Image (cartoon, rainbow, N blue to C red):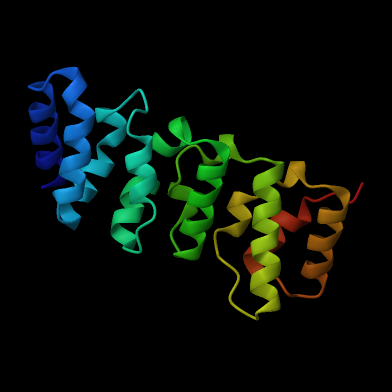
Length: 178
């Protein structure tokens, strides 16, 4: 059904002058129900290879509907190709907060950085301080090779104190404290 919607959308867009395509996409997104929004967002990388719809994608990412958010965030290269670092980091943190599988964030490995590491470690500290469950995907977000010595020590210490979930142990085993 979503593929059919995406093909129809592409056909309608193809019949429009180039200058009218972006406003039409925005209008269809605003008027569409959740399933129509999901179809549009899943096809966005295909429909908009130039990144002209970044604002629409960012707006979609502000939703509290996990299915609509997943459509813009998961299994698509659109955010990785077109979002600036800040927007991409917010997308990653929201995906973690919604409990989504961050392994499905395409381009995440290439977009990991020192600043994303710090955001992930801040989230970890917040979750531990509040005695909340640590987000399962958090280790996938961290580039362990880019950790500062202090960050490495902190993670190893948390591991030794058994404050981190068991799935962190493999990642921690490869951390050198040098």
